[in-house]
Image 1 (cartoon, rainbow, N blue to C red):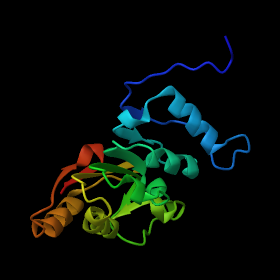
Image 2 (image 1 turned 180 degrees about the vertical axis):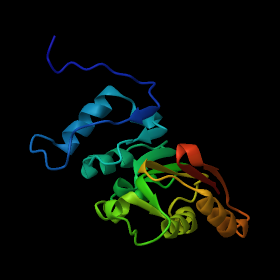
Image 3 (image 1 turned 120 degrees about the vertical axis):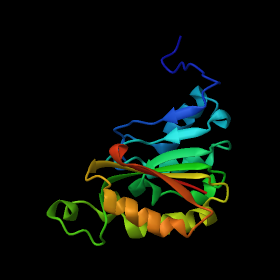
Image 4 (image 1 turned 60 degrees about the vertical axis):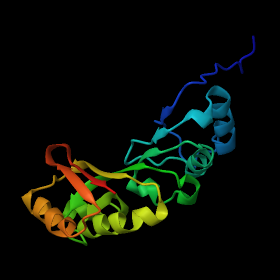
Length: 189
């Protein structure tokens, strides 16, 4: 028996990655981590991957290597901040995308003091919603659902609900659901 002995799990189809690894860890090697992972699970079965920590920095190199090697991936959950760093061309078969934000701000740029402490890529704005909905199908031709989740401060309000109704009433090919108490808005293509 060696210390490098691994168990193999061939039937896993979902990965949720929680980690304290960052790109600046000197002991961290993305390729080594990836090779260990693919020796433990059959990556060709993975259909869902989630990186659920919004404020945590994941090693971008590892994530891009991983996403490039998941041929059946159709569902991805990531923070918007992380999404902006991904090589999206390697995941063109995506059907469901969930983007996580720290806060929602109906105005851009945000005006409250707390919002100035966060980078703009952690803030969901009305302008960003419109941009995502309009461009997502060109990035992911198979996309069916876009979910936007706000984790921390602020909640959607009636003003946001009215804005959605006004903006997306015209777009008949795109429908949406708003779950105000859960801080989720979901678009269907």
